[in-house]
Length: 261
Image (tube, rainbow, N blue to C red; front, side, top):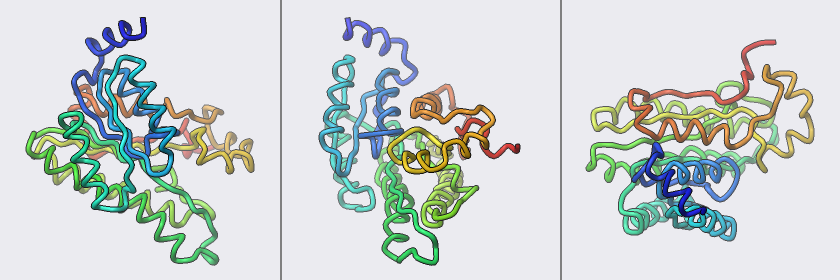
């Protein structure tokens, strides 16, 4: 029954016959995006850095749905590893139509106490990693004269916050990179957009939720914390031809956070 259900999805899915590479896909938002893409008919390369068992479990879950997936370990901040991952994806799955740059880290610290290593680790993974992965996929996408790139930004890019200087700067850089790349790549029919989640219920936000969940909810008009599927739903739309006239956008998924009291 599961295989039959997926056969129906792959006939009707908005990502039928597409291949997606999702970085940081073993957990949280990346995992939800990889699963949603598979439900919509795409084959998926699951990138991970440290969580091998979780990545392999996700591949198995996609295959149990009747889909096709593979996983590959790579630190997105290391250009050589990313080049190997892209080559593996094309060899294993045939092509790359969609790239989701989701891999990211958090190392919160007040600026007066933040050391250079804490700054550089976050900027290198979040911002440089996004650039390196985009660059590695571009030659293939440009040759095919099509592609959809989705960068995962954050509400922190425009709102910042105590202890978030490194993280906010990296995500603000992603927004600027997205817009510049969208302009540069439009003639090649490659669309580049970013999704800026607010507070989403993941491992990464667990600590801040434990400290100030009620205060956070007071600043969200919808009065609820988001879930990874909220981001995945938008990612699937942006990756598809249904969004063929959308590029260079940074789209918030935050329950209205920042709209006012």
